[in-house]
Image 1 (cartoon, rainbow, N blue to C red):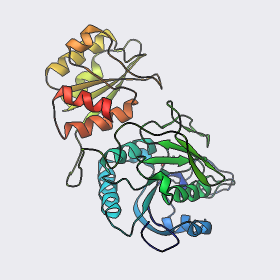
Image 2: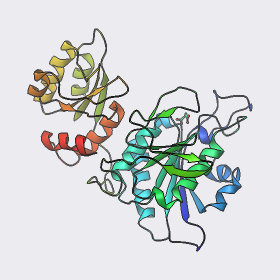
Image 3: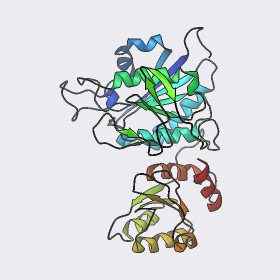
Length: 333
Ligand code: SIN
């Protein structure tokens, strides 16, 4: 580790969220302002962090993460890459709202070109709440980012004493602190503050990816369409009309598509829009199914949820429109 002889150097990039939320009452867990408190305030609340790392904080944004944008993603990816290329930075922690945390984590997992630890954390209760979960989550995230065993594991998500890979994790509960789950299993846990790993992620991740957003101004326009009983062509046709380059269909079961939406998707695919089948089921792998899906050139989203399929498809479309190569990417990443 570079930096001081004793402690690794960890930079915290703050983006807002409930971890920086400010409520009028200590008992309030809704109706607060997300992203109201700066990184300095969060760090002051947890002096123990400095026992594990030399930390510096940078405020990248102050958002409720429902409003996350390409602009902030690109800024984060660029700053993370700049910092991680420096010898005097050993790891990064990102504080983030929980609502789209998994998306930012996966975006960075594909666009960070370093194997040094990158850990994202957040909180379900505002910083001002009784039993706020943010301080312990932040402390654990710094402990994890400062730990050599976190090297080359891809971007990690650490909340509620659990360590998950950016690829697999998803938010599963609207309000509970035990909300982040990986249908394929977590990769480790924080045992009394000590990072302990049990699994590795085989898929290509940060430090071994082909996606470069360092000079990108925006990302390709890709929409998610949610399948349901009595579905029709309306949203598919609207996405085509709006200029979508890709569509992720969050289908039923094994990425199944209502016949009326399927016709519209087949037309879109024929017109050059890349269509990826994902699932609204919450877990499992979308595998090839109907012959008509293959004939129409629809791709399989593998075990990525729809919101992560969207990110991989966006980055893939920056490289190529070749469907067989894009399909391979869904099996590699
Ligand atoms: C947000 O995602 O910014 C608000 C919700 C949260 O952080 O839990």
